[in-house]
Image (tube, rainbow, N blue to C red; front, side):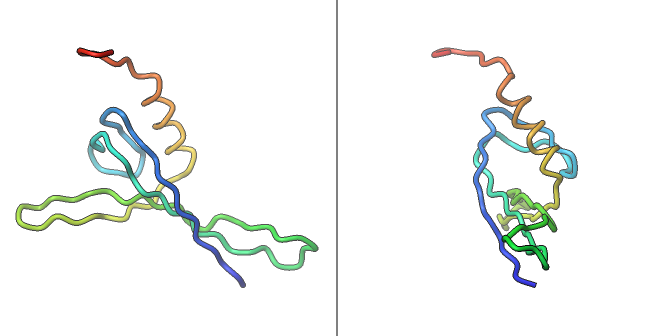
Length: 93
């Protein structure tokens, strides 16, 4: 079955909690990938989501890398909505 992977970036302006990720995500830009497979037998191309992942930075002393964490798209959307609604404080706001 043909499959495809799409990639997007999301931005959190504030530290965020996301179901499936241990601890807080620092404010910043994250890569989100969605893997989908084509649904066979249709007269048009349609896809079903297999997995959505977010790349989370990991700093373990001398090694800095990233961890790939499976997430639910709805949980990501909710976290982004909470981030957008969070009050901004400090100079310049």
